[in-house]
Structure formats: C-alpha cells, structure tokens
Image: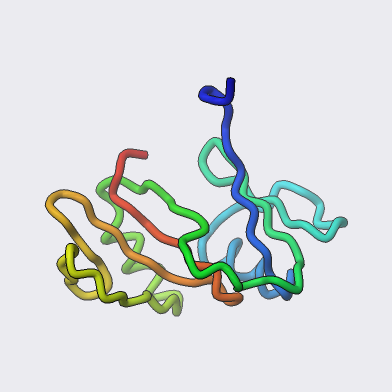
Length: 127
C-alpha cells in the first residue's frame, strides 16, 4: 500500500526564522513553499521536510531525520563543521569513533542537532 510512496519528515521548532536559516543556509535545502503558513517546506532529494512551529520543539531524544549520503559523508560532515555545526558524540560501544564520525564495518554515521535540539544524522548508505 505505501511501499512506493515517499515519506515526509516533520520537525517541530520554536523559531521559524532561525529554522529557515539553519535548513536553507546551513544545510543547503531549498524552501519550496511561500512560508505564509506556520510551516516551512524544504526539498530534500525526491521528498520534502516539513518544519513547523511547536511548543514541543526539541523534546524528541531520538534521531528525527537521516540523510543517506553515500560516499560523501566525510565531505558533507566537514562542510557542515565549517558552517558551525557541532556534531554529537555518543557512547556507542558497538561503533568505533573517528573524530565526529562513527563506524561499524563499512557503515558510517554522524549525528548533529538543529538549533531546537532535533537530532539529525548522515549515514553512508546509498542515496
């Protein structure tokens, strides 16, 4: 029923202006709606990311969005770091940490947060 349909991620934020700057300027996503509503819609690959204002912003303590970036993980992480993104470091006994990137065999992952504390990550899985 849903296996051939795109899924859309929804992220709660407290400040839409700050979120627009982070998602558009820092992450490089293109806003595809006019912004007249209390939601910002960004294009990401063949899907969209909805960013909306909520008093519950940043309360999720798990990963909210994952980007599968293939072999560009290291270069994207380095670019984000240059733009001021701080990467999260977790105690993950099954993963080997090298700087901001964790690995287990061929799988690599890096976590970071948006300004409201939503946990985002990059993984080297296929695009």
